Length: 314
Image (cartoon, rainbow, N blue to C red):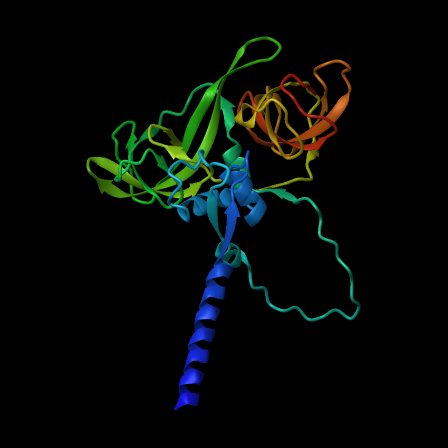
C-alpha cells in the first residue's frame, strides 16, 4: 500500500510539472524597458511587429497600448509562432547535398506593410467613421467589435470590408511650401457583420496599430506583396516630403513619401537614388516605390549610408 501511494504521488508530481512546463512554453515573460513599445517588443520577440494586438489582448492590464511603462511585466504568447509554422511535404533527398544560406533581408515587401504605410492624398477619406464600441472603449484592436457610421444611405451588406484610417496632418513641400494634401495612416481592416443599436456592426479583422473611435473609414482595396528587386525609375526628379509617423531621421526599411506619383509615370517597384538635401549634396541611399497616388508615392528606404531626411531628393 505504501509503495502504491508513493507511486501515485510521483505520478501526480510529474503531471503537474509537465503541465506547468507546457504552460511556460506558451508564454514568454518580458519586463518593459525605457523606450519600449508593443510594436518593438513584438517585432523583436515574435519577429513580426504586426502581431502586437495579440500581445495586447494577452495583457488586459494594459488599457492603452501606447502607454506602457518601464518595469511592467508582459506575457508574450509564443503559441502564435507555432501556429505560423507551415508543414511542408518531405522532399526526396537530392543525390548531391548543397548548402544554402538564408538571406539576411526579405525578398519582398509584405502586403500588410504596404497597406499600413499609408499615403498622402488631397482629401481625408469620408466614406464613414468608427462611431462607438459596444463596451464604450475608445481604443480597439484585432478581433474587437465596433459600431460604424457610413456616409450616404448608412447601410452595408454583411461581409463588406473597409480600411480604418487616421490623418497625421497636412503635408507641405519642404522646398516650395505647397500643400500636398494629408498624410493618411491606415490603422486596420474591419468587416461588417450585421446591424445593432442603429449602427452597422463591424469586426476588426486586421490591426496595424490602435484604432480609435472617431477614426475615418476608407474603401477597401486588396494589396499584393512587392518584390524588393525593382525596376529603374523614369527619368524624373523629385523630393522626399515626409516620413512615416512624421519621423525626422530614417534608415533602411523605413517608409518615406515623395512628391511624384502615377501621373508622373511612377509605379510600384521603381527605384530612385537619393541625394542629400543638405550640403554636401552627395549620394546617400536608394528608395523603392511600394505604392502610388496620382501626385505622390510611398517608398521604402532599401539602402542608406546616412539618415534619410525630409528635403533629400532624386
